[in-house]
Image (cartoon, rainbow, N blue to C red; front, side, top):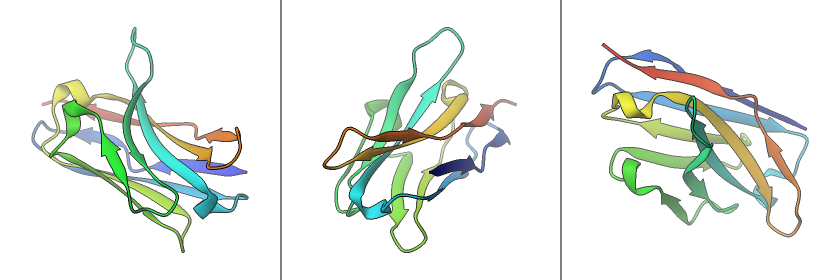
Length: 117
């Protein structure tokens, strides 16, 4: 199984980035997907979640209206579109797959986002 995030980088406050998570080795549409972020000294937190069929999603309050999660079940890829970025959004962003009918889960290695002027 492969879960690989990309798209992180350095961006100024107010800027935008889109993260991608390309997966392989699992029946992608049988897995819910989520993005999590971790900053130094803090626990990893859930940022956004999307169901396996892509019809339902939810975002943590701090990113509502600014971030959008989506998925392409043909390309086996999850996206996180991030707009109006703030310094507090800085962190390592991880993609996670969670089996819909099993306890299996898979994590990527993370991609670093730095929001700074």
